[in-house]
Each structure stands twice: as structure tokens, then as C-alpha cells.
Image (cartoon, rainbow, N blue to C red; front, side, top):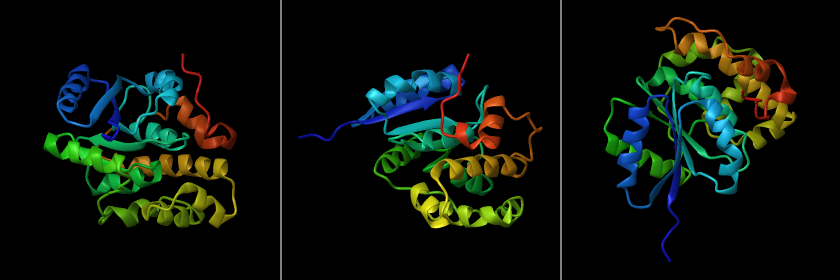
Length: 222
């Protein structure tokens, strides 16, 4: 009996990129593009339907018009079941590794890279393989922006420890852990996006960062 196709959701605000990804993946055996979205809000709107027919991997653009791609990644990582998330970025380099780990990303892909490499990354992500590059020299500088009590969380996330196990180890509930990860991600933004002008924190990200009870809930998108 043939294995079920890997269901992929593509999230990118450029129509040409979405259609290019759909065309590329449609020619790959065993991969099915379950849908595309141009924003985080669209993903939230379509998620109830996707819960009835779950996706295996979500390919998320690093920059979205309404919410940071890493923020969407962290929200996706709290779903049950949670899909694997691959972050697509112009610079999928070591500077992105620590924030991607905090967000719960499975892997990263450079948009300037070989499309065939993306296919291999998606297959590996669907198989449960989690591969992020070493943080390199940027790692200590980024870690220095975090509160001391968040460093054990960062260490365990970098080593792929499941959030439920992290929460149990620290003696906190998973909602509190998720809220702390939102705050960690916001603290890291200034280091991994230092070459770009700072942008205001989206309202929903602010709510998640400072309100543990809202951290795992879908926002009310208008």
C-alpha cells in the first residue's frame, strides 16, 4: 500500500512565489500542496478546515505583511497535532538559527538556494528530522538578550527537547512556557533583523507576549 502523500501548506505574500512553489511541488511524487496563503491571518482563518485534514509541513516566509513569519511558526508549533514548519528566508543563515529554534522551526531554507534542496528539506521535515544550522558567533550575542531564567529553555529547544518535556523539567505548565517563548522571540528580534529598520510589534504578538492565557489561542483576525 503506497504511503500517504506529504501535505504541504505554502505561506508567502508574493503570488508568484506561491504559484512557483505549487508548480514545483506538484511535480514531486508523494507531495501534495494542500493549500496556499498570503498572510498569517489567512492561515488562522483556514486552520479549522486544515485540522480536519491536517498538513504535515508548513513552508512559512520569514516576512509576512501582518505577522512575523517566526511568530506564525511559534503559533503553529502549539497546534495539536503540530505540523513541521520550514522557514523560508532570503538569508537562512546562522543569525536566524536561535530565533528559529525558539519559534519551534524544524528547518530553514534560503530562497536563493536550489529548489531541489527545498524538496529534500520538506521530505525530511515530514519524516520528523529537525535540522537547524549551528548558531555560530551570533549565538552568544543573541543569548545575552534573554533573561537568565530563559537560557535553560533556549538550551533545551536548541537540542530539540519537546515543549511538554521542557515544561515538566522546569515545573511550569505549557501555556506559561509558550508565553515565555513569545517574550524570548520578541527579545531576539533586534539581533536577527539588525540589517533592517525595526518594525512595530503586531498587536497579536504583543498580546501573546504579555498574556499567557492568550498564548496558545487563535487570534480574532478581522
